[in-house]
Image 1 (cartoon, rainbow, N blue to C red):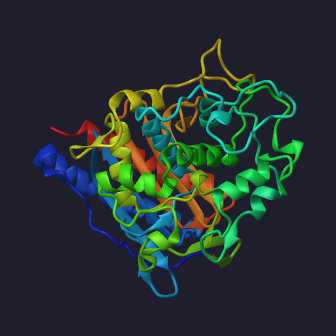
Image 2 (image 1 turned 90 degrees about the vertical axis):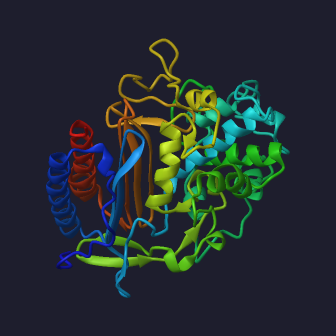
Length: 398
């Protein structure tokens, strides 16, 4: 889909004190080149809106929006446009787990049944405990059974089904969603399989041990301290006038996807903007601190980001050199980047840093693409170029 000349919806952020005059001039040239690359890839792929930020040495050095949050109304997509960030939300659940641990309310290696009002037992291994560490590294043996998980998406707004009700129905043998197929025939800790429902269970445990809903706990310990305005887990918590529409690109057609929610919201429900998420990502990369405000103790951040798999102690289907897990924190791109990404209907997001934490990139699009176009235009066409720009800025500062 070629929509003609793209709208660039935000000004470029600079930190001039970092650069010589010559370097600033070179950066301007590189930024214009980056504009052209992003716009070209958006047009070729049919992405309606894109927002991105480049972070160098824990500071935002570039931030922009392109295209539209609402194509029909010609509302521009800016760094302040709110969007569902999908599985990047899992890192927020992870921070809440670590905060509850700081408060002495849970242990990562305790049997999760210690904290739950119903029992979670893998019928294939009834005597094996499942821990929060297993949940956080996708090694719990809990699987997202289809079509139960997909059918849990509620189109039209926030899900009317409560998190605890869904989970009890999924794990209680008398529940309407229960099946032995909700579990793998793999001992906890021995096999890696990505699990949204396991993440939702971790979020529910935070609710149980703190006595607060996860959305409120997040607000008190993450969103407010970091100044993340217009950020929340539910649509009722945000300004819908700043919320992007979601689009699905199929061939030459473009379909608007209705707003949706999930009862398992801790696995992917955060709604925020590129500008707000950049504050959070900097805190994660900076020992838990953004702009003088501490989100977590440095020791908790280090524990969260420590890679859990080694050559000796790892799931049987994982090579730690190319794929590893922290606690709701992961490696990507063949083990060369750290952070998290997310995919949901009408949503693709990435929040990744290089291993040195010198250069990091946040990238949103409000358009679902097929796998081929996603790899060609989103990742190779835009995401990789944002990293190249970040390295240029890093290498040309004073």
